[in-house]
Length: 113
Length: 111
Image 1 (cartoon, rainbow over the protein chains, first blue to last red):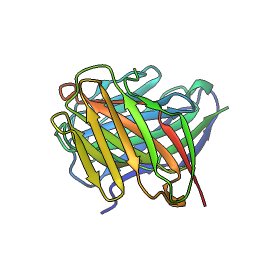
Image 2 (cartoon, rainbow over the protein chains, first blue to last red; image 1 turned 60 degrees about the vertical axis):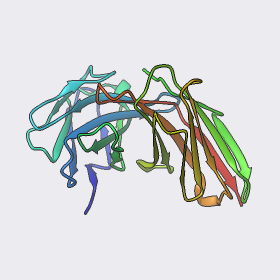
Image 3 (tube, rainbow over the protein chains, first blue to last red; image 1 turned 135 degrees about the vertical axis):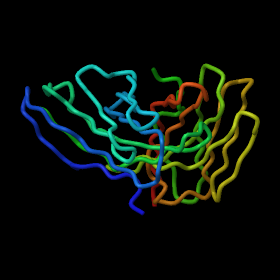
Image 4 (cartoon, chains in turn brown, blue; image 1 turned 90 degrees about the vertical axis):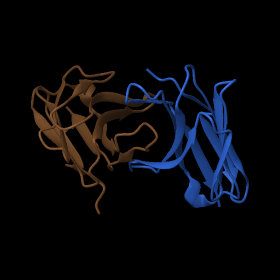
């Protein structure tokens, strides 16, 4: 039981390049989330999904796209990376219940030069 | 937007001492959750307290919730160096499927 797995762990991009971050969970969770964490800013929600085939915008969605084609996977895409997207990205999932906790992956550290 | 506000922002104590950190929030909630984050790692869920509960224990952790003051506290008793981490509170309003996060308290436990 791996929980929530994020790939890659580290990545360096040049401005304008694109990439996809993958999040996979093996707990049959309905809800999945993408956050970014920056010093002094806490966790900010980028996009989230409440089930396969659904996605919704969070607090800071601009510059990102997501897809949830399979229940266990939640992909975060950066179409044209900018230095402001340098951050640590966390994926999380939870059961379809507001009294259930989030399970986090170990993050992807992205640097955009 | 950040609803939870942890206090203090940073705390440094000696091993064996107790650590208390507080969280305030602004709106009605369904539950409040505490998480720990070790350096370079993801967040780990510690404890969830529902809005109709006032106190909850889990091992060396004690959480209280005062909905009239919209505040919660996390007490770690007999702290250990391994407790060194950042601690976050998050509130769940129950109807929008998202948690609202505070900015965290950085705890350093010195051996």
